[in-house]
Every structure is written in C-alpha cells, then in structure tokens.
Image (cartoon, rainbow, N blue to C red; front, side):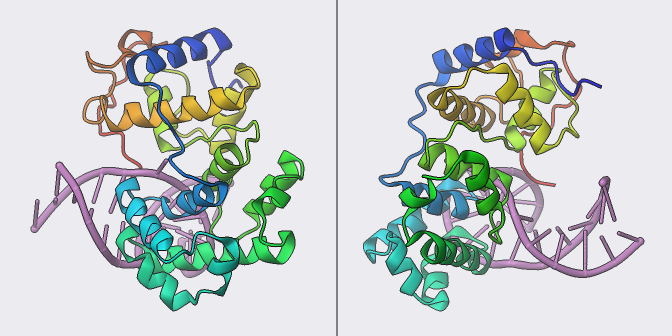
Length: 233
DNA sequence: GACCAGGCACATC
DNA sequence: GATGTGCATGGT
C-alpha cells in the first residue's frame, strides 16, 4: 500500500510557499561542522535556546574541538551542559560521539565524511545516543550529504496536509521526500528548517490557520487534529 | 504552576 | 513489534 501522497510538484509548491513566507532560514547556526554535530546531539528534545547557552560555555572553555572534548572529564562536561536539560544523558552521548570520532577517524569529521553516505549513516547510528534524526542532521548540515532530516514536525505538518498517516515511520517519511524531491542538499537543508520554523511559529497553536501559507493545500480537506505541533508524548 | 522544547535508550508487555 | 517511561533545565 502506498504510504504517502507526496509528489514533486506538491512538495516543491509547499517548499516555495514556505520559503516566500519564512525563508531564508540560515540553518544550521554554527561556525564549524563539529559545532553542528554537537548542537545536533544537544538539541534532542530540548529548545535551541538552551543549546546555545551550553555551546557558548563550551566555546568559552575552548572545548569545541574533538581532541579537547575527548580529554575533558564527563563530570566537567555535565557541568557545562547543565543549561541544556537532560545534561547527564547529553554529556554521555556527546562523549560517546567524540570517542567514536577520535577512535576511528583521528578526531576528524572530515575523515568521517569521506566515506559513502550509507556507510557513514550506519556508523553514526551505531553510536549510543545517535538516532536517525541526529545522524541525518549531522550528515546533512555538517557533512553536506544529500539526506533530508525528518522529525515530529514533519510528520505532523504533512499529516495535517492529508499526505500520510500520523503513524508513519521516520524511514517511510524520508523515503517519500527523497523519492519525490530532486537530489539537492541545499534544498533538503532549507526545507527541513522551514518546516520546523513553520511549526514553531505561525502554526504552533492552530496548524493550518489563516496565517499559514499552506492553509489551502490540504489533499484531503482539513484534519480534525488541532492539537499543538509538539514533539511531546 | 503547567506546558513545551530541533530524541533516544531501555524496560516491559 | 509496540508502547511507556526516564532523562532535567529554562522560557512562556
């Protein structure tokens, strides 16, 4: 059975509307690929505001280098990551990522990004604390690989547009997008960013409201789901 | 004070 | 395989 009703024309229409209303997004806000990767791990289920504080702490300590993050103790890292929330978990996950990077790639993201997409993705997913969304964010925004990040916002927004079931899996969503869209990293980066910005700003309270640039685009008429576009259970 | 924020791992059924 | 729960701070 077909899992989604997305096609190239529809998706590009959505993209162009979002870009006209909300773009350019200037995602991912970071100075280096490592900062992107650190941000991707830290932002799991927390607001970006909190992540920025923690990243500025790391910068102030001169720790935004793989070698230095490798040497810093878990306890010290926990203190620096306090503003993020879930700081014990995040410190452990960041350490696991850095240790992998140092052990297998000489602490160089450039080395990791030399290997083919599928292999790099498998490798990232093998690290404890790196799931599909985090792996894809690192690959797309830091590595420049042609892969698009999916998330709870993407699921919700396109569910409300009548494109798929709310139960659709991460992989199924990603297949739909990648099959329909041209291979274009910049498009993938901006599209994901715009979906998140849409969900968090204009359509936060009542999705597909009159201020939403996608209001008239529903494939199956309006859904009855008007709960907030959150990631929460 | 309640709710939410750019997930993931693990336990349980 | 599907579902529930812990992780924790900061802004609104």
